[in-house]
Each structure stands twice: as structure tokens, then as C-alpha cells.
Image (cartoon, rainbow, N blue to C red):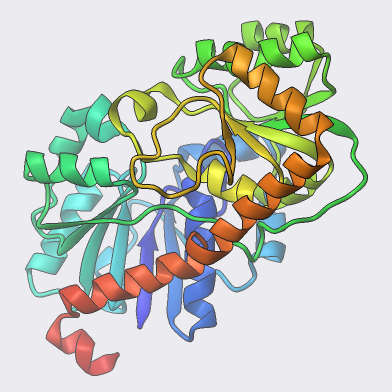
Amino acid sequence: MKFLFYTHSLVSDWNHGNAHFLRGVMRDLVNRGHGAEALEPVSSWSRMNLEADQGQAPVAAFTRTFPDLPVRRYGADFDHEAALDAADVVVVHEWTDPALVARIGRARAAGGRFLLLFHDTHHRAVSADAEIGALDLSGHDGILVFGETLRETYERAGWGRQVFTWHEAADDSIFRPMPAEAEGDLIWIGNWGDGERSAELAEYLIEPVKRLGLRAAVHGVRYPAEALDRLSAAGIDFRGWIPNAEVPRAFGRHRVTVHVPRRPYVEALPGIPTIRVFEALACGIPLVSAPWNDAEGLFRTGSDYLLARDGAEMERHLRAVLHDRDLAEALAEHGLATIRSRHTCRHRVDELLAIVARLGLPAAASEVA
């Protein structure tokens, strides 16, 4: 089958975690003998910011790292109908322009010979529900969402036909243990965000690091001056953007990492950890997390990672992991085992193919498959 992914960007992972997951999904589809291509707009916010921040080098690095993943950019004169006509399965990400979402849906409803799926990996369905509710999803055959609570939200609102939970996962062609000589104690990789976790980052990252006197590093983008000042005052080394493909090596040079979820996920979308948890565990680094509710039982809390209910408990957990080698090794081993058994992109491709089989390809596409 030929899979076509409408992405915000596949090339850029600058403040755009969905690229991590789709790269792994596409790579596994290709390895299984399917075709997979990504389309991204020339006006992609993530890619424009990446190039403004880092120049063209990351684009060239993407091509070297993912030579098997074809990407085309589209502008106002792009022939979407021709691209759709060549596909068997089309997956449209929720950051796609609403007018284009509707246009693709109309092409399907007018007899398009492809199965059409909408893919939501954000909290806008609960934090900006008017935006999602305004999308014309009537032509889509199914909806893929990255958590059960999000699936329930779509179903209650009547958005789309059939809605399927399709969690993110680790691309273990990239994310795997890469142990090296330790250069620091703690590393955190994430973006400051839009005020969605500022207080939480202070309580669960900055203050524990400061009180313990850890050698700590932070990678990410969109840090305001105030945030950079707070990191500096705590003795934390801010290192800016890091290509996602380099994250496993960065993990391998540190002894522990933390997870600090954004507030909308904690308060309104329990069970959605975001992709950073999958990726950290896949790299075999001990993980200590700020509070979140693993409502779907994706992991084994206390075995795969430690959960801190407040800043003081985060401090205690970090001290324990850094001073108890057996505990650190057990966490790394258990977390890695869970990823390998349940949460790789190969597992998600299995799920995607099962969804495609359940929905069924349109007759003309089935004859070609």
C-alpha cells in the first residue's frame, strides 16, 4: 500500500514532537514493503523557525539520517488531488490548514480511492475545542487520537465517524541505549512552552537540581529571558535546540532524566504521557516524573519510572537514583523492557494496519493493494 502523510513538518522537530513519531512509523512501513511519503507546507511554522535558528544544516542532517523517507513541500499551486489519487491511505495531521483538511475530505467524499484518516496529537480538543470543532471531518473515514480520553472527547462531540486510540511510541531505530562516559548528573529535554508548565518546571526541575547541587543540562527552545535566568541561577546549563536524532547520545552521557508534563494533559487528558516518556525509556535512562495519571496502564509506575507527587519527593527520588546503582539499573532495565514489548513504532504500525483492515480500503484501492 501507498501511505501519504500530511504533516506540519517531517523534516523539522523544532518544537514539533509529532515529527519524531511519524518518522518512525514511516520508516517501519517502508521496511515492511509499503510506500510512505510525507507532504508538508512551505510555510511550516516549525521548519521556518528551525531554519531561522539553525540555518540549513539540520535539513541536510535529516536527509542523511532518514534517506528512506521522501518529503515533498506544497504551496498554493500544489496539485493535492493528484497526490491523493496516487495513495491508498492518507493520514492528515490536525495542524494541517483547515481549508486543506476540508478539501481533502471533499476529494474522498467525491469518490476518492483512498482511505482517509485524521490524526490528532495535541490538547486543542479540550483547550481550544472551537478550533477542532470547526474542522470539516465529514469526509474522513476514521480519526486517530493519541489517548483514550481524547477518543472519548471526539465521540462525545460527534467529531468524525469512527475514532481510534493510537498512542505515540518510540522510534527504536533511533532511540536505543547509547551509554557513554557521564558528563553530568541530570538532563532534561523539552520546551518551555506557553506558560503551560512554568510553575511545574520550577518545582520539579529547577529547585530540586538547585537544592541537590546537580550537574544538570537542559535542551529546548522558546525559553524566555526569565526562564533562562532561573536556569542560570540554579546552575543549570542551558544548551538550546538539539536534533531529535542526537537525543539518545545526550541521554547516554547523563545519569537520570525527568518528565514534566504540560498542565492540559494532567488536568484534562489523563493517560497521555507525550512522546518524551517513550523516548527516554527506550534509551535506558532512569526517569523520574512529575505527577500524571497513567489511566491506561501504559507503564508500570514504580518499576519503569518513579513518580514524584511534589518537589520534595522529586528531590528524594533523584537523590536515590543517583546514589543507588541497583535502583538506577533496575529502572532503566524495566523501562526499556516495557518499551520493547509494547511501545515501539513497529507496534503502532501493527495497530495502524489493523485499523486500515477494519475500516477497509475503498474498492479500487483494494484491487491495487
